[in-house]
Image 1: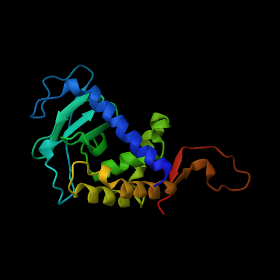
Image 2: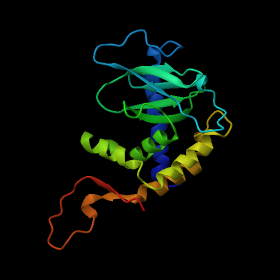
Image 3: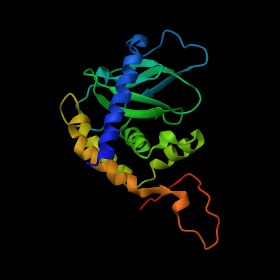
Length: 210
């Protein structure tokens, strides 16, 4: 596993751990229904979609973002306060506090799954967080078109059907290798071949589906 991928996984874990500590005082009721939604926020509802064969009990999970956290029902449903303007980063942890899934939750993508987790990991690996907000949304929308994104989904699914209290942490080599394989398919648009004499103007990122 490259140093870059190892650093990504470490950063992801540290960031999510910090978020969970900040939001510990705002845990919602066990039924997933908030006692009140502050002005300017919305109640985000969705589901945890575990891969077939996963031994994880949804009721043991907690979903958190920068505003608070919500418990997950036995059927996988959850609710938590969220900002209304755009996708918001969220993490799913088990009773041991270990990372299970991640997602950028929105009206269009309300659920946490291996797809949302792969999308999030590749977004961080590509440094998408450092781009202007409009480009961040473009990158996020196109990550799923990468052919090798499905390989990462496969590695995550295999991890989540395994036993143990730290499914992703216990499978870091396979997950890290899948992340590393997915990143080379992306290159700066300014580096693409252009006709002779054409003006070179960077236009964000372009995804090579090969």
